Each structure stands twice: as structure tokens, then as C-alpha cells.
Image (cartoon, rainbow, N blue to C red; front, top):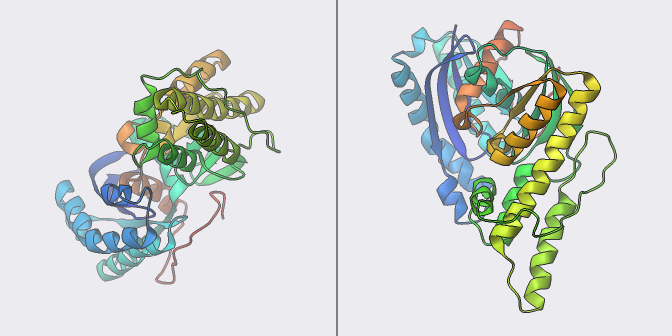
Length: 335
């Protein structure tokens, strides 16, 4: 079954063709990240305008790259929540119009479910149940994936997401947007033990909090400036990265130990972080659990992951009509 998927929840306009939720025939991404970097983060209005300009072209390129026409497609999938609402609506409305004009089923896909499904593209043998950490710019969740379309949230951030914290700390340190890759690069030459950063306390055994950690870095930078000193950027980047990776890995592995999960999965943009991957892999081995990590090109936002999850949503009977609307917020465990 061939699914044409669309993704436009943030600053990537993407389209892809995926067969049976596993085989990628094309995966096209047009990103406004360089333009957004001028402002130190995503400007929703700019992102929406760039989606409008790019969505038709990425759709055409995805079909051409797969050597297919719209008549060959079995269904159209689109990420409809959560995300920047103006950006989300561009993809939703384009997908609705295309599906209606072509007489194809329309499949709504939750963005975080898509991130999890990115692992199906890298690991064809992977199937539920498993435990997954979904960490990105706007989300940090520990999710028990019970079935292809059944999810139970065990823990989540109570404030900032991990990716958001990376972006804000990078800006404080004078590093470019997006923060995750720039901090990881700076950390390569830094000492992760140079700065003692706090471990935020939070209610809920598997919940996380990063607002206080972000504030601690900002305070260190400001205090140093008041003393006429400079922060050692590589050392602070390494210390901050280490603390975030430790927090996420510890919570995920604790949930795995408590639930007896033997399959542990990472997903989302922060899943590209090498230190997090190492900590999770090492900890899971001690638990006798197998770790699945998405290929780096599928960690960030892309349409192949939406098309992959769209396949399973379609099989589960989750289709929509022209009344489908984009939503800025929606839990991954919605029914």
C-alpha cells in the first residue's frame, strides 16, 4: 500500500511516499531553518509563509522521486497535530484538497506518533509493544507503545521540552539555532564535569523538568558577566548536554525496569544526540533490553515518518473527511 505523507508542523515542509509503513520510495524536505536562525528560533508567521510557498513543489518532487503519479497512491496522510497552528493548517488544507481531488482516503496522523514510526523505517523488524522516549523541540514523553495506534504516556515534561531547552541554552551561550546540534558540536571539546548543574525535582516518577536547568545555565552566564569573566562555552555545553542526557536516560531506563520492557526505543530530534544514545544503549544492556535508534535522517521532522504511521492508522480505520482541522495541541494517546 502506497501512502503519500505530508509534514508541516514547524519549519520543515515535507512530502514522502512510503510503502506498507516500511519502505521509503521518496522523502523530500524543504526547510526554512536557515532563515529562522536569523531570529534565534522559529517565527511562526515566517514558517507558515514558507510552507505555502513550498508545499506544492515538495508534493510534486515526492511523487516524481517515487516514479509515481497521484493515481498510483492509495491514501494521503498528513500531520494534523500538534504544532504551530498556522504551519499545521497549510499541510492539512493541501492534503485535504489533494485527497478530495484525487478521490483518495485522507489519514490524519499525530506528529509524535510519526516520530515513533520513524523507527519502523530504520528497523523493519520492530513492532509493538515497546517503550519509547520521544524528545524533540516541543515534546518530551516516555510512552508505552502498546500497539500500532495505542499509546500510554508514562511520563512527560512538566515545563520545557528537551529540545526547547537546548535552543534556549544555545542562544544564551551565543551558539547558533538549532540548539541541539550546535551544543553537541561545542561539547566535543568541553569537559562535562566543569560545571555542576542541578537535577530538577518534579512530581511523577517518570516526569522531567528542564526549566530550572535552563535557568541555572542563564544564571551562571550572567553571574560570570557581572564578575567580568567569560563562560567556557565548550565546558558549559558539555555539562548541559550531559545533564539533559542523564535525566532523560535515567527516567526512560527506570520506566523500562519497572515495566519489564525488553525493547527500548528513541524518537524525535533529540534522539540524534550521541551522548543520549550512548547512555540509553549502555543502560538498556544492563537491563537485558534491546535498543532501537532511528537513522539520523529520520530523527528530525520529515514526511516519511508521517506516511509510515499513516499506513497503520489507515489499517486501524482512522480516516477523515473535509472537516479535518489542524490542532495546536493534542495528546498522543487520543482516541
